[in-house]
Length: 346
Image (cartoon, rainbow, N blue to C red; front, top):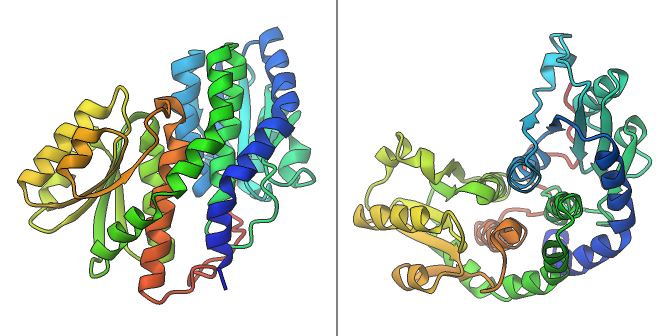
């Protein structure tokens, strides 16, 4: 019988279809508010997987909406009792459960200061939803597996919806409609993900590398490899790998590179060449044919996927790598050791 994790990975295209249709009115209401009172900057509070989604938001909102984004350090409020001035900002709390006390505290502090506040959550009656002026629901349904998959991609999609509506770009909005089909294509690459997992069967550590929008993807895939397969996966931006971490790469050392076409491809392809020259075991997630030809271990992304939406698609082969590696090692993919579905931090 299929595990909850496997089912939830494969549910993602249908979940995204439901989200884009069901929550577009809520997203437009938020954008109407933002246009009436444009924030000077954004503050985003999140933990764990949701914090990786916040990294994606930093790129999307800054590139397309030209609004500076600050990723909150909740302990500044909860432990040090020194809330910064967020009065002219939009404060966004991202939490799948909506129960994170520290994330709620940031949103509540912003609201008390007169900031606009928004919750992105899978639970519309949660503490986070209650704390915020507006709510975008993830529409993911219950996520039974401890490891987040469909709630992560819906968080990214909610952010992408907000970005696209805020810019008013018809092209970006139409690309959102193409997302489920691109995700279906990525799921079709499961044999390639299994092959990458097989190459990692005896490895205890590795690098996971992306850049730009897909720095978030490297963070999220590395997290999945840690929590499901217990591999010490180190996530980096390609720009930072050369600042020290490349020193640990030697013959046979595994590196997973997320390199969709776009602004970051040339740098990631150059880094892959450097790693191959060191005789590293390089696997890639890409839609660039030349890079795939140089790396026998490769999961192919849809050719048409736009760079700004590629993290929503590129994470899927990584989820499948972590899933199959955990299965190969005989681990319980639905109940990783030492973890719970909801983690409360203050």
